[in-house]
Structure formats: structure tokens, C-alpha cells
Amino acid sequence: VEWNAKEQKVTITLNGHSMILWIGKTTALVDNSKASLDVAPQIINGRTYLPLRFISENLGASVNWDDQTQTITIYYRP
Image 1 (cartoon, rainbow, N blue to C red):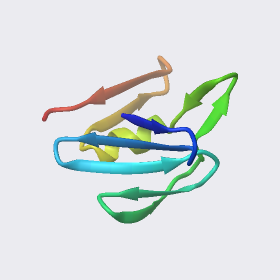
Image 2: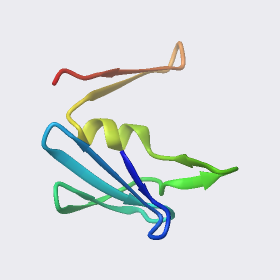
Image 3: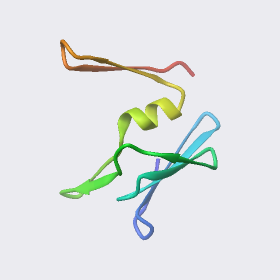
């Protein structure tokens, strides 16, 4: 994960996949193709928040939500 403060962008690479997300924008680049985000990345109190489901699924992981226990489970096998 790389942070570029000047451009307000986060670059994530893993196992041949790459994605670029910009603070405040609902468009990202995933493996050099445009992709839409449900919610834009944000900075709150000096912390950068990114959409976990979007990143996980675009890196090849599966994401499950258990409404009963309010639990997120992420499965990833390289």
C-alpha cells in the first residue's frame, strides 16, 4: 500500500493486481480499468478510510456479512 499525499491517492498492489483510489472520488482504477465505488475513500481525524469490501473483492477475496452477529468475514487464498 502506498500513499501519495500530494495527489490524495492510495495505490494497492497484491499478487499481480493493482488498484488506485482517490480521496473523495467514487471512481477507482482496478488493473488499469475504471471501476465505480459505492462510497468514496475519506480522511477523518487524520486517518484514511477505504471501502473494505471493494478492495477485498477486487484483490480476489470473498466477503461475507452475518447480519445476526454483525460480523464481516473475509476469505482470501493467494
